[in-house]
Image 1: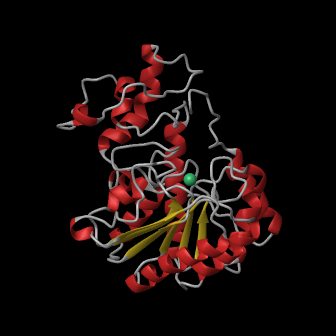
Image 2: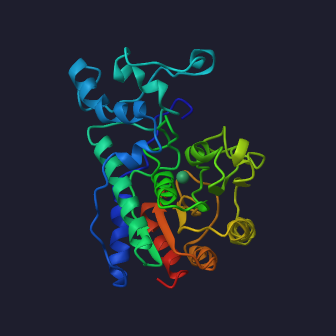
Length: 331
Ligand SMILES: [Zn+2]
């Protein structure tokens, strides 16, 4: 950023910190993860993206594009006039093709990326099935996160869109009114893009105003969906320094949108803690205690709920923030 290298804030310690904090409460059950195969992923993402993520690392090693120590980050992007007519692509080496399917330079691919992204989807779908089987609440500790991943694009630390895959899975069980509430600091551009023209999935997001915050090009209030999806996309951009009272006022409105929809499937929550006051990449001002209030407001919707971990990079506080949030659910 600004010509300076910045660390990759999305790291394994985030999830182990949450897990440890939840274990310390002694009040939660940890469930085994079930494998779901590729089908739920290709129901949402284009085969070209899935193929790329599966094979690009081994291709890059074979061709010498990486020595195995350096991550893969594209340097040439399919933008503007270059993108006209789409991208046929198969003749282009996968490492060179990364820039046709990537939003940014902040999402390195390493040896384990594909398997990790697959595992995060399995975690999300397992959480959804636990709720479909009758539990009122399940929390998928997904890593990598998902909400920036679009049909054919990865980026923003996200590869497969865990929440969108769960929502599509719920539609596959016969639901016609599915709601995704996204309370990560960043706008979930991927989720918005995937369901943009859909009236069976409502996407509601509270996030930092894209005028100043990633992903910059989506998340404005006037983006309300297209075609049959018009009115089924709601964005609540927030100013820097937003504290809990102003946040709760926006969340109240977001929750009312969900109540109006009256979903016929469990509520899907994209849960990020990068709204925390000391998050290294956020600028909102929520405290650990505030997450209990936010959790209670979402619990007040009184619906079976699937929580899916998105962002949150203040590792020393992320566990306490998760515990506080769950306390709002009485969990
Ligand atoms: Zn985020």
